[in-house]
Length: 492
Image 1 (cartoon, one colour):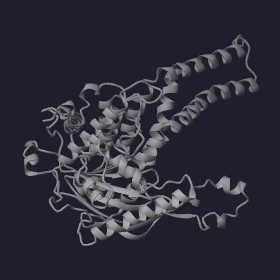
Image 2: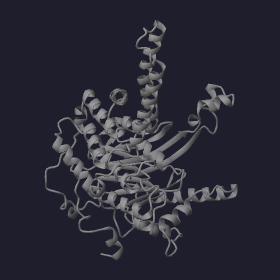
Image 3: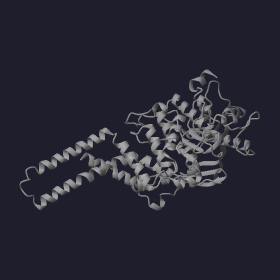
Image 4: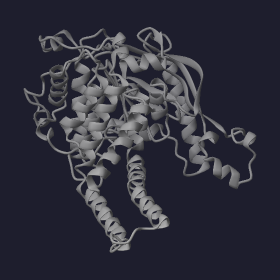
């Protein structure tokens, strides 16, 4: 083993704690053409400010932009495929289309097939986990508490508490989070785990229900090179656990690039290269564009195929070069079943070989079958879990509790001063009404202000959980309403 490998790997790291023992998954994208409605993304008030009529908001020659053009690829379990390219090349749009979250866009032609079936929202929910770019977690919960609450929300009802706890511990072990399992998650305002550990917690939230397909949108963004490398090593290990891992990434450094099984290089929505990472240099060398010595292939070829929009002349020249590369690649793989370029000496094989399968644990694994989605906890159970999660998170926010306490003390002193000395004299009807009004308004207004402040910070997490189908709006709303009422009663 090379010295560089010993920096990131050890005998312990080669083990697989948490594998997917279901049937292998196959993801196919056939002749996909996708357009984005740019006009629909403009806020309505801006259109009104420009005196545009509502029926003209989604019209115009520039209202629809082609984000993906004639895209084809095929990937299966045991492989990790990376989608690389410059900003705006269609990486995120592709992930949104695969996960059925393509809001504001439209598939013009082509289809996405998962395990031989056309992709639908119900099929995606059963076998695909989507880790978005932003970490959407409650900051005051520890890593173990975060995963345990998600396990209670997402795992079926027939799971016992010991099975849920075991599943959480398996995920913590697989993602190498044992050293920070009892540390707060934190955010930009609250000190907690590091950025790489927080990203692994986000992956663990999706990994809890043991999906066969794991999709990640730029998981290394905002991380230093060492942390990013360790994260991709973790994803590679998850792929060796009989999973299909698909991620988007801008320009990975060379040692990260070498970890990828397959690479899909895109620019302006078209495919420039699709094949193994180790063969990409050979492919472009045969076209007359060898990678310079001591250069990162990912950096060099992304720069080579990107569209330069500094001037009109450079833009036209780079677009012409990109179209040339796309046409050449399409010609080379037109007779291939999986639309992957293969060198004469090598064939595409899965990384989950029989030797790796021998490392799988022989102990009994708990799997979530397709019919178990109907056996998730009921609304009452979801309400109690969400309420406990809210209380655990908010009662650790000492600064907020102190503010509420000072607010309650000031309002109590104000009312006390106003009505001090009236115990001997009977209050008039107007004074009694005013007293009851002030006493009755303190708690509701405190609840309203608290809910507004918390909902703004938790809105992104709520939308993400609703899209994943973890719970519905009802249990969350009543848990959110009940928690500040209880806390306000305690304070007052």
